[in-house]
Amino acid sequence: MTHAATQESESLEKVVTLHAELQEQEQVLAMFAKQREEATASRNQYELTLKSLREEGTRLRNSIDSQKAVSIEKEGLMSRTKVLEEIHDVCRSLCAWKLSKMSASRVELVYEHQNGSSHVIQLQFAAKAPSIICELTFNPSTTSNASNNSEHFDFFKRLTASLDPVWNKLVQEATSLPALQHAMQSIDVEIGRMQALDRDLSAVASRFVIPKGIQIHSVGGGANSNNICSFTVHFSCLEPASKWNVGFDVLRGYPFGRVNIVPEAEFGNSPANVADICDVAFGYTRLERACEYLAKTFFTSCAANQKS
Picture 1 (cartoon, helix red, strand yellow):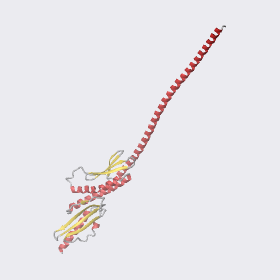
Picture 2: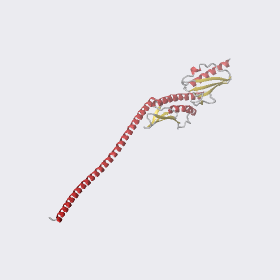
Picture 3: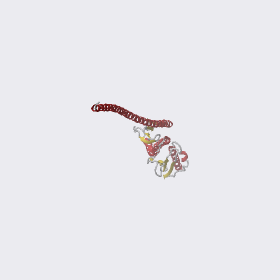
Picture 4: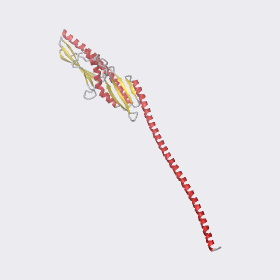
């Protein structure tokens, strides 16, 4: 074989070898490209899965938070429901107070008076149950009392007005149901006493001479903070000429609280011994009975002086 043929043969072998290497590299490159595509697809799938898991995690956290909120709200509602049941029981034990309105956040308790007016307790639940916020208001009567004894109704209106500041403070300071129950019981008792005093004042005003009328005082402040009302009754006769002025100071707690009675002679015979007046003027209708006793004592004294 000639030298040229040998070189040509060697060159052909190199070409064949190079071609084989190129094919192998193309195969390797195709394998790497396929692996890259698979890795890219896998990464995209992982990203989608991760996104889905994150969304699911957010949803679960929101669900958990929502469940916690529902549980807290449920506990609050259960607590308020319990308070509402207790309030209902309280009203059943206090026959004068009635449940007027009731909701999950507010309760209205009403005390209706005989003259058509009413006291209303607005009870609102605080943000932290079972704490409560209370307020007392007075609603005057919407009906006309023109055909009735207006002075009689005016007594009760003025008496309750004098005690409203004390009752308001008592109700506003009640931040729990037991405290509110105590306040309602105290108001209930005192309203009953004011009704009794109202009837007695009306009876006295209609039967005896009270020239300057009956003065109703504000309760809760000053030196005479327990003085509910005061008035002076006149007893007089022409022969022998005599006149007594009997002062009454009615203190808080009537008809079982103290009543100061001071008889004085304006002219004529001096007041007889009325030491027994304290025994006469005790309990219900005490003012009327005291005036009856004083009138009897006065006119007996006048008759005795006339004979002498």
